[in-house]
Each structure stands twice: as C-alpha cells, then as structure tokens.
Length: 570
Image (cartoon, rainbow, N blue to C red):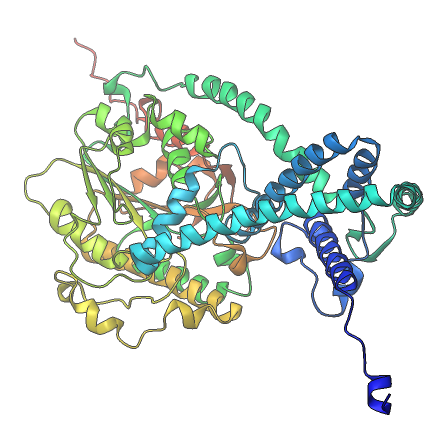
C-alpha cells in the first residue's frame, strides 16, 4: 500500500451529511422562530450599531410556553398543534411587518378589523407612482411573501416540535431551567439595551392586543351610532342657519399634511413661519384680517378623509368603520348646512379624486370638480395630480368669477404638500397658468422623489417647501381675487409622516379664518384665536369635531346684531 493510498481521506458517510443538514435546518428554524418572537413591530425600535448583539439577548416567554405544551402532547396532536402555532406565528409576523409600515406612515398600529380598506388606497398610491403593471407586480410580490412567511413559520415550528420530542428529557429540563431564568430576569427588570428587556413577552402582547380589537370594534360601532345620532343642529330650520354669513362666499381649504410641527419644530419651521408672517403682512396690506388656532386631527401621516369627515360632520372619525357608517347616513355636514340654509351653491374641488366618489352626495355638494374635470393638461407632481395654484385658478374660472352666480360655499383640497414632497411646483403669475401645460417645462430638472428620499434632512426641507408653496398660493389668490364678501377658512388635515416630525408628535393642525369684513371676525372674537395666519403657542386647541358646532353657533341667529326697534306710534 502506497503512502498516498494509506492516508487518502475517506468519503463522508451519507448519514453524517444528512445529520449535519438536519442540524443546520433545525438551527435555521430556531433562528426564524426566535426572530419572529422578539423583533419589534416598529422600525424605530430596531437595534442599530453596537446595540444589535445586546438587543437580541432575549428569553421569549411564548417559546417556553409553546415548547412546554408540545412536550406533553401525544405525537399526532403535537403535529397538529405545532402547525397551528406555526401558522399563528407566521400571521403575527405578517402583522408586525404591516405595523412597521403603519407606524412609519400613519404613526399608529394596523387594526386588523378596521384597516383593510386602506390597502386599496395604498394600491392606488402605488399605481399612481409606478403604473398599473408595476402596482400589480408589487401586490403579487407582497401576497407571495406573506404566504411564504406563514408556510415557512409553520414548517419551522413543526420541525422544532419533532426535535424537542426526540430529546424529551433534555427538552423538559431546558424548559424548566429557562423558565426559572425568565422569572428571575423579569423580576429584576434586566435589560442590556434601554427599553428592551431580557424577559420578552412582546409577541404575546401583540397577539392579545389584536384579538381584543374585535370586541373593541363592535363596541366602537355602538358608541359611534349614539354619537352620530346626537346632533344639536339636525332640526334647526333653514332660516336660522348661518344667518351671519348671508351673501358671503365661504371657502374652506385643506392644506395637505400641514401640521403644528410645521410652525413649531425647529427642524422644519423656519421657512414656514417666515411664509406665514409674510402672508399675514400681505393680507393686511390688502385689507384682510385673520385669526388662527389649532384643531386636533383624528389621524396623522395620512388618512385625510378621516380629518375631512370629522371637520365636516362634527363627530370623531378615526377609523374606516366610523367613516363608512358616517357617509352611509344623513348627518348634517357643514356643506349640507349651507345647502339647507338656501342662498348658497355648494362646490367640492377635489384634485386628489381620480375615481368615482359617491361620498360627495353625503357631504351635500351641488357640483364636484375632480382630477378629470378641473381641466389640467400638465404633468403630475409626485402624488399630486396638479399644482395647488392651478386648482385655485380652475375654481376661480369655473365658479368664483362666473357672472351672476349665487354665493358659494366651496371646499378645496390642496395636494401639492402630499407625500413624497417632490417635485414641488413654483408659483406663477395668475395669467400664465392657462391649461397647466406650462408646468411641463417648469418640472424639467426638478428634484425627484427618489433623489429627495435618500436623505431624511432633505425630506424635511422639501416638506417645508411644499407647505410654503401651498400657503403662498392661497395668500396670492386672496390678494388677486378676494373681495369684501370672501370668508376663507384654511387648515391642515393632519401632521406629516414620522420621517418629518419624528415619533410622538401631536395630532394638532393649524386653522385660520380670513375676511375683509370686520363683522365676520367679530363673530369669532370669543374663540380666543391669535391674530394673523400663524397661531401662537398658547392659541386654543379644540378637537377637530368641535369646529362644526362652534362655527354654526358663531354665525347663527343668536349672535346676530339686535334689530333697531321702530319708534312708538304717537
């Protein structure tokens, strides 16, 4: 036998390879299950830098409980229960990922009972950004990924159950020992990263919270029915509604994502506060006065329709269930109050509406102008179908300057300050706007959303620019077209996404009322609002649903000046 023959390595036995592969799969299954149990449902809570290893020193109580249960079950039942537990953990993992998106955009958790309609809105947003084929591909990819997560988690838990059953004695001892350790670190509050405790129960808490949302939704439906039925203005006769505004053109304008942080957060407020100060000066020079305060919006980061419906209806609309219930009813809105009072034509100007909008009938609009009927022939600006200044010009040409018209009540929704805040249009002279085709040349060379979103600081800067553009457009319009009969109320719908304002920002939004007729602002003198279009830090804060009743009361007959008495007959 030669030297090389004697010491040639023998091939690995097939059984050893299979055992090594099986052990590797078991380790991967354990890692997958562990991560599903301990990874948080908010991107801002994910560990970073040097804290990553310490953040994963966790003992998930859910794993201990599941393993203890599986060890005492017979083989057939163990497989079934392991499959159920794995599927449940897979679904919970999908919910965690959805929560990450919700916290990033809306600063709140996903509600598995009430939030399903939001996925349709998300699809429309993606479709408007990348087109229908790209949106369909994204939806297909998301569905396949969700199914894969559930299937892989089910297989992982079933595999770990078999491994535990094959080593039952060691498994029982391990569960007992780790359970004692869990109780000890829980009692001591042991944590290697602030807020991340070694004794983990985050998955159980998340599952419990989601289960509780089912009865909570049922209870909320009952509570909303009672709230919507209580309406102090439902039966007010038409001649007694809005007597203080007869003959006035009343315009309500929503500025997208215009939140309190835009005027108070030092990271973004410099440009906005300068714009508001300049706007107040320009309005004053044109003979207008203004008062401003704050409203607390029911939403943040998105969900504008929840804010609009709350403002219009005088009831708190903070979820889809409440919204659907509201718009299927007949509650009096601000728009329908003007319509009922007679003398006003009611107009909705909604450039963000790109599909059928049956809710317009609920609000009480006589006419609705959407993205298809405003006459725009220029490019979209990110999500915005058209620039705000064009929206104002189209409203002016089609309604506001129409000869021999009745007084108007109009709601205008601005969209130029909508995510992703790129590209942003520039202000034009009013006679340059035309059909909007002028914006094609203007948009060339503008920063795209892809460029802006590479840097959070730039996102904040572009957000502030977009708010400045919307406010400047509105102030310029008042200067150009406003008269003694104009009453303008403009406000934000909600705060922008957390990437701009951070976690934990308030839900407050600014609101201003502008008029040239001093009798209009005399009606709201008791509100305590700040002079000008920038509310001061101590300005009153009302819940958004309070505005409808306060407005109808302020401009109702109880505040009409007393009629002069006729001299007594001799």
